[in-house]
Length: 404
Image (cartoon, rainbow, N blue to C red):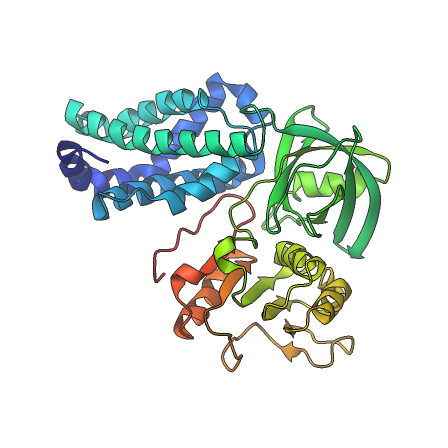
């Protein structure tokens, strides 16, 4: 993969480059959007730009990729890249955009590190970039091909068949292709991007998990209104969906993507543990629905944490789906328990004392602090890291190592 000469340079300079990545990515995005403002219209999430989440995710992925090249030089870190590739195709990234990113990223590196960027240093990190970009381009090309799509041409109009209020801050939208043609093939656990024109005329994208059985020609997304915190505004896309979209309206959706999926052939008979908190229940509900539709006899354990039963989106549906599966059981935790769920546990999720099935594949989704905590609990309970799969809403700020 990485040449011996470049590996030596990257190893020597990784601490300096890694330590400066936050400043590098800040300048990178600033320069790129100054010169190419059209990229903020329908490509980049300006909420993540404002919060710094996108640049943190970029910095983390570059550092993780470079570290992987040094620690396992004969192994390409496809697992790391797969998640990024799926996120990219879900917003329509094309291979020519990697050249744009390269121009502004390396301009920022030179600006921040100055004379430390010798020709050898520049060449070594250029090799790292194009190894990463080349691998992503190849993966993304395969994803587009498998979906039967031209690169970047992922969008389609869908009609809202039904709008349903799940909780005071969660709404579901049932959707059908507006052109009457068949829906694209989807897998339980995948997500779609929703493309909305905002009041200021700029298009913004957000990803939402499919929250129903992905078979047939109907799809459902379940959207939580994202409240602002620490003086930040409410999530602009979720807020607009809640305020403005009704049955009969049309939404622009991408084809479904995502690599945290239920139907891996290797897992066809193994036990499944679905672990979620808050709106992280949405991909889990889609997985439960698919298992029920298939008449699955796999052992299924559902673990969910929420503020209260009233705040638990899709709770009744989840109970119904668990009841349809002969070897399924559910355990709920609520910070404020209610009589709607008399058997629920009080407080935050604690898997100690929960009988986890042997050789289970664990799917994990929820806020990052929750996932870090519960993943640690699962590891201490003896669940191998390789059997824990996780989905992140938004930029991936958590790139766990084998035992992290």
